[in-house]
Structures are given as structure tokens and as C-alpha cells.
Length: 293
Ligand code: SIN
Image (cartoon, rainbow, N blue to C red; front, side, top):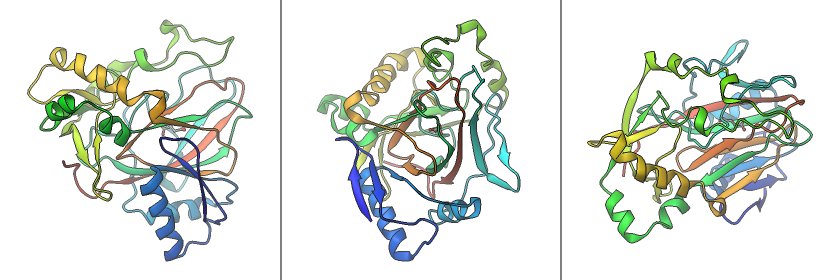
């Protein structure tokens, strides 16, 4: 397997492998590359649905996603573990994941990682951004690090800061969604609110590295503090995790398989391909243990 880093922060493209033929040696190489680069991409694959599922199963227990409205997404028939992230060419609405977040951190066992296989890629646009939570932590001042060290944060499915305000309304240069046109009712999510607390400074269970474990999709406040007290610091930390020099940007082509480590990476899917179809099959694997410091 050849590994080609795609930015100074994180991310690598891996070539010279066929993911439909998995050996223990290849899985070891893939897991090592994921630990080293946090998000990895395998262009020019030819995976059936079952082969994609079998690859994801090598990383642990598959998530059977239960999203609350308005995030209900079509599943592939017979495969409840596969999300179809589909946006049709005439769909003028928001996309799935069009804001900086890690997946489902409101759960006790969030997703460990996701595998995304691109079936239909736009000719341009529809890139995904990733950012390194290792770099975000390592570049904080010593004063901020020690203040955060013993804090826990509450993560909630209510997504108070992951709503309209942070989802880019621009879908193309000539198509911009006005706020009142959003088909996005945050009141819908209130009835199933799930809250969990996690350490703000987390240690990665496999690499042992410390990382800044907050994201504006799900983190709502510090434990023992009000939202109003928490928000100024959280807002600083979110903007810090989104600094361009901590990120990479990937341009997808059809039949590319991507894997991101949801424990140490945020992601943001750009909604800038109006007039083109984008279809991704995503499978997520659950964490084995609760996040710890
Ligand atoms: C997501 O999983 O949040 C979206 C990923 C993508 O469509 O690139």
C-alpha cells in the first residue's frame, strides 16, 4: 500500500490496494494508516454493498443508526447498517452533515469511525472537510490546557448550536437558501433529547494521544455550568478546532472509499453542488468503551 498525505495536518490517500480482497496483513496496514493520518481515502475501488459492510465489520460493532427527525435517511434495503447520504440534483435544501461535527457524541458510545463509499460524485463540489482534534489540543496555551483538563462537557441530541445558524445556506453561486426557506424544524428533535457527558480533554484509546473533544454539533455546555457560562469558552474552542491549518479537504471521485476516525476528527460536508447528484453509502462502527481522559 502506498500512502500519500494530502495536507500538513491530517489525511492521506492510499493506493495499490484492492479492498474487496481483505487479508489480516492488509487490515493491519489500513488500521496503522488510519492511526497515523486520522482520515484515509482509497480511490478506484470496486466494492459491492456486502464487501463494503464486511470491511466496516473488521473495525468492530456496526451502528444501526436511529436518527431523530429531521435527519431520517433512507436505508439500503436489507442493510439497516447503511445510511444513504443522498442529495438529488434538484434538491435545494440543506445536506446531511453540512457543519463541523463529530458523529453522535451525545451517546455514551459514539461512533468510533465511519466508512463512506461514494457511488455518485458531483463533477465539482461536494468535498468534505476534516480537522484534527489532536492539533486543536496540542496548540492550546498551557493555561487553557490546564483549565480544561478536569472538565467534562454535556453533549446533547438537541443540537442547540448545530442548527440553522451554522449550516451553510449557500448551495451555489446563484442559489442561496433564505433562512425562512429552511425545511429544518429544530423543535422536532426536542422530544427525543439524549444527553451524555464526556471529558473535554480526551485520550485516544489506541494512540494514547490527548485531543480536544468538543464539537459544535452536539456539545452544549460544561458539566456543572450553565449554557450561558459555557458558551463563550465553547465558542472559542469550536472556532479553534475549525482553524484552516488543522484541516484537510477531500475532493471525492466515484468509487472512492473514505474512513475517518470519529474519535479524533471533526468533519463538514460542503453543500455547493446544486444541480448535481451526490450519493454516499456510509457505515459507522461504535466505540468499544466510553471516552475517557
Ligand atoms: C456526514 O457523515 O456527516 C457527511 C459526510 C459526507 O457526506 O461527506
